[in-house]
Amino acid sequence: MKIIVDKKGLLKFIDSIRKKYRLIAPVQKDEGLFFDAVSNTSKIVFDYINPKNTAKEFFFPIKDPILRYDSDSIEEVKKSKENIAIFGIRPCDARALSVMDKVFNWDTKDGLYDNRRKNALLIGFGCNKAGDHCFCTSFGYGPHESKDVDVMVYQLGKDEFMVLGVSKRGVGCVVSGKKASPVHESRRKELEKGIVFKKKMDVDKVYKKLDTVFDSDYWTGASFHCIGCGTCTFLCPSCHCFCMSDERNIRYRIWDSCQFACFTKHTSGHNPRPTQRERYRQRVYHKFSYYKKNFGEHLCVGCGRCTLHCPMKVDIFSIANGTLDINEK
Amino acid sequence: MKNREDYIPIPAKVVALRDETLDVLTLQIKPDEKVTFRPGQFFLLSVFNAGESAFAFSNDSGDIECSVKCCGLNTQAIHRLAIGDFVGVRGPYGNSFLDFIKGKKDIYLVAGGIGTAPIRSLLQHILANRNKFGKVTLLMGARTPADLPYMDELMALRKNKKAKVDVILTVDTQPEEGWKENVGFVPVILDKIKPKTKNSLVFVCGPPIMIKFCADTLSKKGFKGDQIISTLENRMQCGIGKCGRCNIGPVYVCKCGPVFTYDDIKKMPKDM
Ligand SMILES: Cc1cc2nc3c(=O)[nH]c(=O)nc-3n(C[C@H](O)[C@H](O)[C@H](O)COP(=O)(O)OP(=O)(O)OC[C@H]3O[C@@H](n4cnc5c(N)ncnc54)[C@H](O)[C@@H]3O)c2cc1C
Ligand code: SF4
Ligand code: SF4
Ligand code: FES
Figure 1 (cartoon, each protein chain N blue to C red):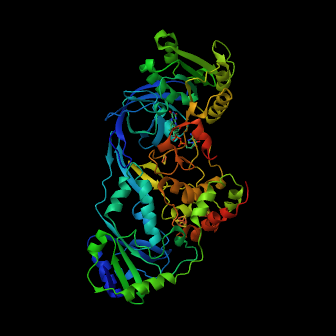
Figure 2: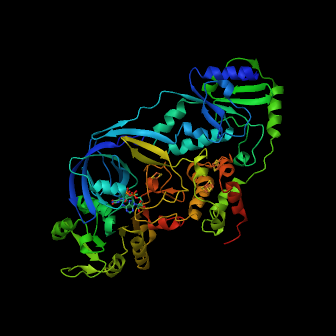
Figure 3: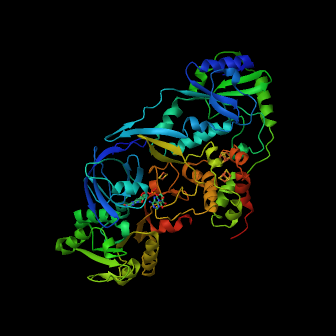
């Protein structure tokens, strides 16, 4: 069911969600726009491309306690009973979660992640414009995609929003309102069509090409400016690498990055990926080749954050797309 | 094995310790729940407050045994353990050498340094099922005689006529005195013992450089890539394909390995 509400009505709907969920939404902070817990819905920002952080940290936190130990026992950390709802998640970030579900359930289930995932409510917010670095449409979905969320919201006019329940849980929580008409739906389609993307890549071609250019010198130049800071991986909605660390009787799982020099270093001192060339190449292959080989989908969703926030302006789009121009045997 | 989620180890106690060499310690560990495993598989050993590290099972059944070379933070903590100390184990993970043995085969076991640990597990399995295997030859090497692990066991094995295992030992350079075994790198001695290709399998575990030269030697002798079986020991954290650390191309060593044929290894991208 699709309903039409004004902004007041939308905020009322979002507020009603708070009864059952801890609400996360885009809010302005000193350092920029972030997804964060919201207690006052008037603080929610509606005009943005994407928050700096991604939705993944609410399912796969930066530092997540796994277990407590002492000198003779191990105790599982109790799973949080609190369910979260994220308002304002873009189709790219929502897709990233669906994509990550696959690795976190690869034969063995990851309870820490799954538990939060299965109880959450995602309220997507369609985009009406694309950022300079967005390339979601390259992956066969787009800025109005609703299949990865529970409820989808589109902004049709300054004070007009269309709300639609997608999943069973989503349908269940959409309050009644004015029913949307075909006019509204065609208005939405128009808006979607009007979005201009500066970037589009043939990811299938790139995927095939990557099978042949692993040893190319291309990677030396492509990674030349990368300083291995890991920003790209931490701001990526689908990067899932982690390490573990014992600190004062708690074992944590902590985000790690394939861009760090010691990530793969063997204890013997040997490092399979000794320079940024191999490390950046790994990131590109993981996103555009390996993940698809293992799980049938690309691990990049084209949100553009890694390029936007890289201190060295390393652009994964141009680098992946640029492989198509490599002419060596 | 109970399907353990969330990376929670099974509580366990150290029940025996034995120094193999100056820097290799063998531990016997008793978990609170029974863990059954097969040769070639690995597990994660937790020393709390230090961390978790991957080790090959170095025995075939019963309590867990592993042999640990002291080289970093966790392995130092492991070397400081005493009998009765509390640890955690997670596993077994990975595939087994046994997945690669079809029918009655002649077996060559080739081990260098700490790579002997998983080979010992396979050797114990063979001894427990001796009639299912043909000729068995063990070639083990290390830098010096003092670096050879499991010496008492191997000497006993040599004397045990019923075991019918040919035990060949070598060290890299001629020791000062008292050494009556071979001198020379493992691949050189492997060449000398003239392994027969027919109906045989070679299991090679050790430093990557040793594996490479052994595989070259064997290939020259006509061994096919699927007759040479080895393990890869990439740095690991989760052991279950999630932390993204151990891959070589699309292959996650923790999930698809750690045991691979040389054919598999040759096909992998040069990211090792
Ligand atoms: C499947 C598999 C099976 C394995 N089986 C065995 C086995 O049977 N036996 C075995 O011994 N090992 C085995 N290993 C290797 C073992 O997992 C590593 O040796 C162990 O994880 C090292 O952990 P650590 O904390 O001691 O090293 P870390 O501290 O994690 O070392 C990390 C890095 O820091 C450096 N470093 C840390 N501390 C020091 C230091 N004091 N001095 C110099 N450099 C340092 C090291 O160079 C290394 O690069 C296996 C590995 C795998 C993946
Ligand atoms: S690509 Fe950019 S953000 Fe990523 S590690 Fe390199 S310098 Fe940092
Ligand atoms: S790799 Fe970059 S563009 Fe792709 S999903 Fe991650 S942050 Fe977004
Ligand atoms: S050890 Fe974590 S993915 Fe293999």
